[in-house]
Image (tube, rainbow, N blue to C red; front, side, top):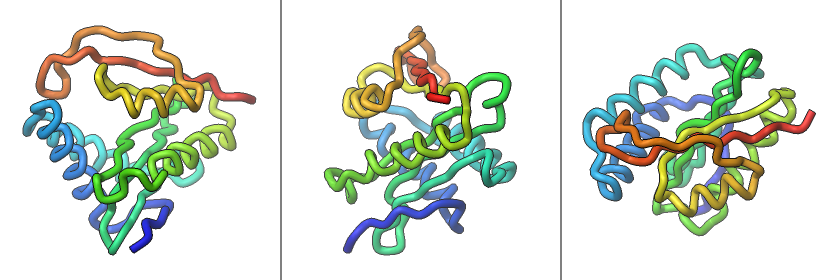
Length: 164
C-alpha cells in the first residue's frame, strides 16, 4: 500500500503523532511520560490555534494510519522565527522518501509565506535528521545540555534564513 501526503488536521492525528514520538524516543533515548505528555500537550495546543495560511500541518498516511508528520508554527514568525516541529516518520514508511517530501512541503510553505527564518529544536545524535535539515539550508546556531525532554541531552537549535 502506497503512502500518501495530506495537508491539514485529520481526526486522531494528535494522538498518533504523540504516539510516534513517544514510542520512537522511548526505544532510542529512554524518554518517558514527561516527553510524551509535552508532545501531546503542545501539539494539542497548536491544533487548537491552527490558522491556515499562517501555520502548516502535513501528514503521511498509509493504510488509514498516520505514519509521518511535519508542522510549521507561524504564530511568532513576524517577531521571531517560524518553528518547524513534530517532524517524524514511522518505520512503516522509512526508505520511501516521505521524510524528504514532508520537509519539502514545510520549506515550500515558509518560503511562500515570506517568513524571514525558520527554526527547529532537536538534539545531538539524530544524524539522519540533521543531514536532512542541513540539506535544506538549516545551520546549527546553538547547543547546550538540557533535560526538557525527560533525560539529559545536548539540545540543538538550527535556523534557516528563508529567501525573500
